[in-house]
Length: 132
Image (cartoon, rainbow, N blue to C red; front, side, top):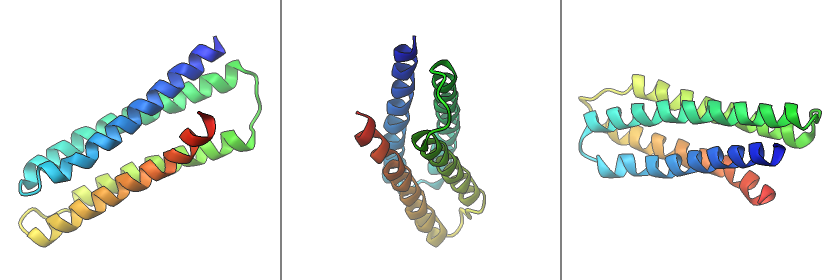
């Protein structure tokens, strides 16, 4: 049962990575259409929040079922989850402050959006390399 829950946990993490990679294409596909960029990034943000909640729940269930205490690995995973959630909040905050009428703001938002997504991928990558 624990192995099955670890499998579910890994699947949700891989799904989250897939969504992050797909969200890298949003600013590139809609490079001249700010309204579609906003709509696409809002949808992806909601999906990311959902996947992060699923990852946290799966990790909590694995921790409780395996009767393990808090180890360094678990603390690092929780810290990474908090940083990933903070990145999603930051993307949403930047989106709210985004002014559609100024192309300078549009290009700046695209750059910040892609930088945050790449940073989120770089946060997850060490865990994938260590545990697989």
